[in-house]
Image (cartoon, rainbow over all chains, first blue to last red; front, side, top):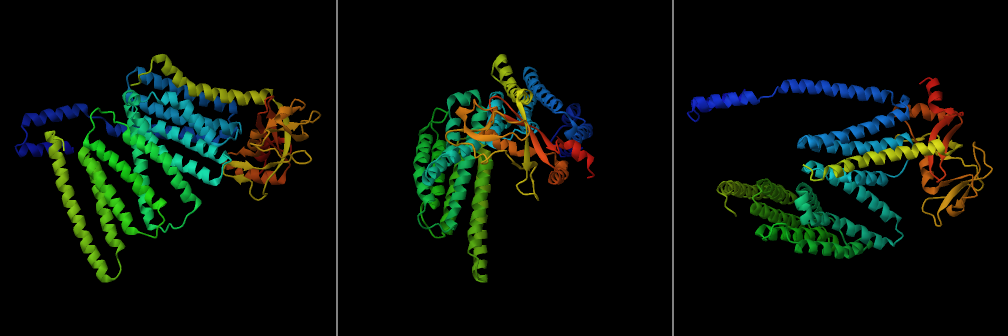
Amino acid sequence: MGLERKLREWERAGLLEHHVVERILSYEEERSRPYALYVVGGLGALAIVLGVISVVAANWAEIPRGVKMAVDLAAVAGLAWAVHRAHDGGKPWAHEVLLILLQGLVLASIALIGQTYHLGGKPWQALLAWALMTLPAMLMGTSHASALALLVALNAGVVTSTVEWLEGLRWSRLWLLVLGMSLLGTWPLLHILVSRIRALTTWRPALAEVLSAVGWVTVLWGAVVGQHLWYARLTGDNVEREALVLSLLPVGVVALALLLTPHDEDAPSPAHRTERALLLYALVTGYAPLVIPHEPLGVLAALSFLGFCALLAFLAYQRRQVWLFNLATAGMAVRLLGIFVELFGSLMTTGLGLIVGGVVVLMVARFWVRQTRQFREQMRGGVTP
Amino acid sequence: MSLLPRRRRLLALALPLVVLFLMVVRAELVLATGRHYELAISGYDPRDLLRGQYLRYRIEWNASPPPSCVEGSEPPCCLCVEADATPENPRVRTTPCERVNECQAFIRASELSNLEKYFVPEDMGLPLERAIRDRRASIRVAVSPRGDAVIEELLLDGRPWREVVGEEPR
């Protein structure tokens, strides 16, 4: 066993007393689980489940529809009951897993009923019905996983039905585009805005966190994609650009509301200010290449992205989120190297580009190592940056 | 764990079950209480009837001119089954939905597209496609008094398709 070998090594090095090593080993032995048995047992159970599914699938056409429906509804009822029992039994892990399974089974049941009775219907109807009928149950979840499942269902239902609604509108192309782009731009911002509602953060903190994370990831990812459109040639005026400019008004209003909305915490911190700056920066640099007619401007794309990474790294530093700091600095390093690769031409410029790029990357790496060490020390000492 | 009181929790968990149950009941009610008609069908393209797991076809309505009722038209239109129509290949016409009381039965426009595709088990696709090309194909439809329509069976030479395909060598 690896742990025992390591403990003996530490004992020989004089780091641990013999009796401490013995106590740790006996504690670990008591807590040890028969993992091999679990794996074999799990494989056996999986084989049985797959076998049952295959037998059912092979005879699917022969099974009367009444039996199919009865078994399906019984499975939904059984799973709902199991969720209830897991809750009453104080098993949060089982409760959350069963809840997500129930949500999935409900969607599968809608599809099954549709196929059995040849009901047809459109995907948005099925997705919206699924999202709405499982919403109250999913709101019982307390984990991030069930919150994400809820959000996936809700977004699938709302987005597909909104697209259907837009397609049915008899508006001019310009105003349809304005409405579509406004919804697209405000939707992730609304996620962040809703995540700050105090009632939600106290009642369902995990859901508020997931809402915020989904909103932020979408905004930031959108900004990165937008920034890289400086590489494209987007010249001349067209209806799409006109619609985009008009859609900036609702996006700006929601963004302003977001910038002015206080965080749940009472005192504004430097991190909140940086967060607002990041949001503003992401929106401006993400939309700019789409709004301003331009020839390919690779340097601007790179600079926008570097500024974005620097702000993100600074926010991570203020929040002491090492993983985010690592991600942002890695992004900077890769982008810096990319700039020099873009300059490749003759053997001379290629060589110089690689040398300068390598030096810059090494400097970023040195800064990164120093800062992460500082982070760890600060976290240990509880010092606020 | 959940902060909902026990009763509300049970209601929340029962909601999807109740809705799914009602979907099944609604479809079964249409099948059990609706009027039944047999409608001839033909493929858009005889070489490729299958789209994914659905068999796509066109209903050959017994109407002159052919019905032109589509979803979203103003005023809402319905397909009216004429008062003297027979269950097999019934005579139909397009009519405003507010004037369906003179019809034997009617089908709402939103239901019509649902009648033109049929879910097929994966391994049955090709034999069924072949059988439809060689035989007289039709669908048996149940129509509720509210204008809902549910496909009851796909028929080949007037017999359920499973019986016919089952007899043929694969």
